[in-house]
Length: 548
Ligand code: KIV
Ligand code: ZN
Image (cartoon, rainbow, N blue to C red; front, side):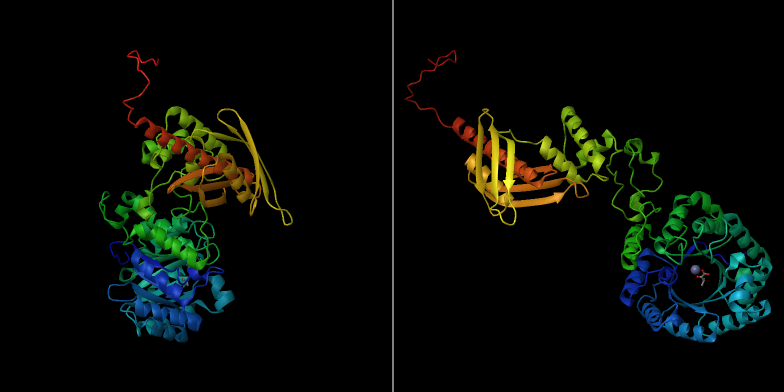
């Protein structure tokens, strides 16, 4: 059996194979920033680059080796082809690290030997022997990879691996370079290596895989069961073509299904000891950093780190999760460093999720108010994918927390344009059923509306805030207006939404004015009530309570 470190080693190749993603090149500062975050994540080995590929790559590897490859830091590894020139440059680049590793490789499949290398098998064996020994002359930690291992003749593969170990390789890596294997194939291949390579006990078996058939993670999990102890992966699964095996998916699969994997590592089935050294709470942060710096957007439904990975949308699921998370959740979002599972509110959301969100926002509505708000929420959700907390607050403030309607909007009309003087005409109905119509000019249509309303109500105030934003996407979406007025140092707000922003602004302004008037009236009434009765009042108070 291969060497067993007693846990699964995580070899991160985001900065090497990940950076080979089309369009994902990183500058030196960005590489260091990612490497620093990988340290916080707790990876065992960082493959920092391919030093021979370019002076930029050389500098990046050397810089990371010097700054991150400290005593307590991870192993810093550089990639090199099986050639003296490559290995020498690589050795120089990783040298500043306390624990440097050279990772050298050559292809072993007949397809690669015939068309790419144009070499015979015997020649490849000789190169492996010489180049692994050469790498060992620089560092004690040498990894050897058989490129395209999964399409290689297993008998030849065993011979190559044995040669590499005898020449000094401490880790032997089995890459599925073209993402061709199935989990069954991959497991069998690792089992075969363990059985047929005489000195396999002197090296750690590593696996590396691409996701061309979407099987990379599944293949690795099967490899673990058959003795692989190092996984080569990338954050967010970025990499050549369809990408590499995703670090976060592997780590979380091992964490969530620990009791399944424990026996394969010789542990008690119920052992709670983590299978990797990864600090899972750093996963989300790392994923965001890699996505932001590489510009590789994460698909919304990506496992573990996708925007929808913890979003329960359907009413049935939301109801279940609210009753008990275990109904629809196998990973607690907090494990990967997300604040909490958020029930995303959309058109499929049910009443119970809506009620919970209202409670979280501090609203306690009576059943009738809840009914009204839920209907309005559903109407909004029909035209808007995600209903936000602000949308809910708007529904509440527009429909539940409305002040007494002293003035009701009946009509608003504006004329404006590049050659017109902005003019507004507004008709309101007072609560005594009288109608008032006035017109005013302003610096713009909204200012004209505001001046007209002030003419109508005659209550001095100052406009302190006016903001418009779109509630629904698209050119025919709704505009949401928030207005704040100040009267005697007190602020009164009003909100409204409408497809026409002039109507929304007028209504928002009237809401704020109604709030102002109701409050002023209430305080006038209060002070009236508290006035002492005049002792010389000519009024006689009848004991029966009737005035005479
Ligand atoms: O996919 C691959 O084979 C590789 C090797 C260089 C390890 O990236
Ligand atoms: Zn690769």
